Length: 155
Image (cartoon, rainbow, N blue to C red):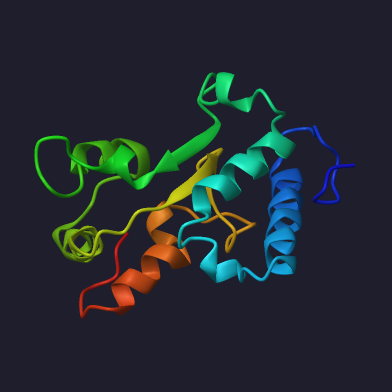
């Protein structure tokens, strides 16, 4: 058993990932860090801890090898040439983005949102979403940035 109360190396299924995320989030809550606050400075460490339990301690050497799972961070979706999102990268990963959706995503980028999450079989996971969501922009982390501005919902 790991410190999160789950086996240290498990079959890589959605249910096992969910259980590891819940266990890791409980560990943070015991230390006084609310689940919604993990995204504010603890998200990379959280994702790494979860993957260490779920995929094994050597996960960094194996992520994305089969194209099914790994970590993504906001910077992976940003344009290297300009400030803001790389909509070609986003379209390849998550589907086309309408002009209305771009307005919401641009508002998120302008606020400097930076997050790390886990992707597995087409779903995005973080401490607040142990069941996964269809796109990272459905994560509450990004939705909170949208709530700060008056723009359309992304994706």
